[in-house]
Image 1 (cartoon, rainbow, N blue to C red):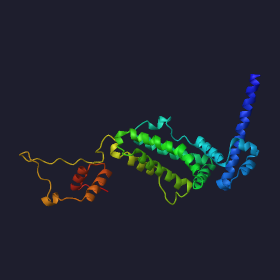
Image 2 (image 1 turned 180 degrees about the vertical axis):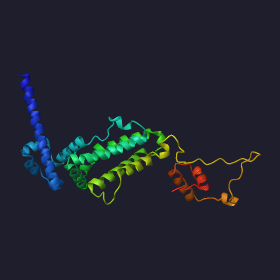
Image 3 (image 1 turned 120 degrees about the vertical axis):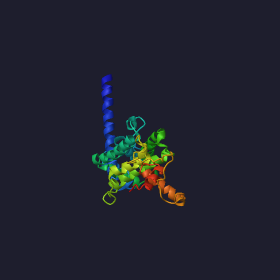
Length: 285
């Protein structure tokens, strides 16, 4: 008796799952064809091939039906990064951030190729967000917010990076990647604004982890060390410059000092090292 009851329950569960899947498929068909506002529960019922009573027994209204589609989208295509997935955080920050950025873009491209309606559903959610903000907010609350939290926590845990605002830096990092996907895939305008993915990721990672901080030698940018000044027989340093003293003591504006700082960092040098190499005739691009 117990075995028959179990088999009966399994059958009912299977049939229930099939009905829900039929409703979701019918709903997706109607939402993508007519938009959220243009879709009715009657149209979904007809497309799903089930009774209206069956549809309402699982979904109370059209908004909950759309949310169910977004939930399935997250379940199938989400999981980019979670607190329970520590693999992304093994290694140095350069490797961790580069790996995550590549994973994010690879997964988005895979989703597009494996599920043709993936992009259309995302576009629909964005397009309807003005009239029905709860739809887009659900995606942000369930996916985006969690990803920002995890990455920000990671950046905040790496004290050597000296990031004043990890959350804001995370938004900059992810924002650039999202913009890339929008140009390349959602707007299909990659040929208008071409950008190599590797070039973008390298620039983003270097923004967070400066090159001189990502290797053991902070003076790696110096191709050739400057020679030491010679001493006279009395032990004093010999003069190795010819310019007048008033030129040597010339004061620079704050803007000039800031520009020197930028140029020095671009060449992985301290400002003093950069100025000395300039004075000795070193050429920089």
